[in-house]
Length: 408
Image 1: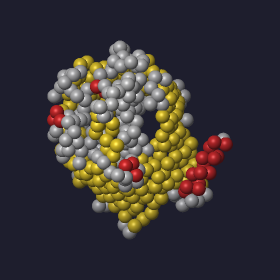
Image 2 (image 1 turned 90 degrees about the vertical axis):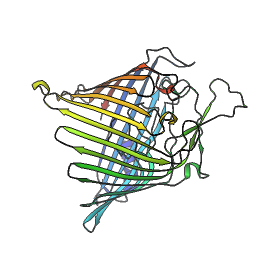
Image 3 (image 1 turned 120 degrees about the vertical axis):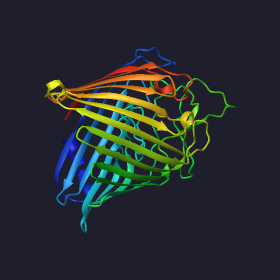
């Protein structure tokens, strides 16, 4: 009660008014992973376990303004760099009317999502990825921002001022799913302001009939680093960093669109990005796109179950010069919702690289247990990897994971 009262008081100060309501909720997870293959690098383990705590405090004033605070903490038994804390959200929200339109302002640390694709989102650039968390789920670090939204019958317009850059997290030398060469903790920046560089982003979204679309723009520090090799004249000891993250100043223009019919979804994301280096260290503007389709089958074979089938193609115009793993990949998956009391969901998918001999199969089972408990069992099985793929190092590990979560 003392903890809740103290945090609530801080929330009231941030909201600038006496609270009329506050809510405290969150998740506590016990997690474990098993890696069946022998470790590829010294110090790596075949088993890992840990805990994750992510509570959320929400406080609202009588005037409708609110404050949201979501800290995050993970402990991992195998990788010291996967043990980390973050503030996912800590923002003050206020809103009002502007003529026939409405406005909303968020100040602080927040998470923003753009895009329509399932496996990867090209247009989603505001937040940094927390890559040590999960290779596929794309969890995000909290991003300091001022976020203004204006909405009306004409659509939704959003503007962002992003005064601080977050560096991407990477597994440590003892972590699985890591690159072949160790990555330095300290990054380099193209801008002399380094992480203090002020970035800007904007997005307009609307719908026309069956079409939902968004147009976005970003100017500032790239969320996806290039990598520089350490000075070759200085010999490296075991565990020393060989790759140094380097964050360029970029411009990105994006579009995401979705056509929704009764049983089909057609999805598309596309970007044009300039100011970045390719896999060989040369600056190269490029285009990338994702095309996807979904088909829903309701009441499968006369049962209560629903099956959704998904196919996506991820393409990068740089081809083999692309430093990303999404250069020419196809993802095919099925989502089975049992529609039972426990909310059971089963996902199975296959990811294949059309330019290299990389294939992986993933399974994901989610189900509520007794009381406030739920579970998740997931597995990514790497069927084949291609040593000629210079980006394959971080995706050679198969694993099975267990997650038991208590929601409060």
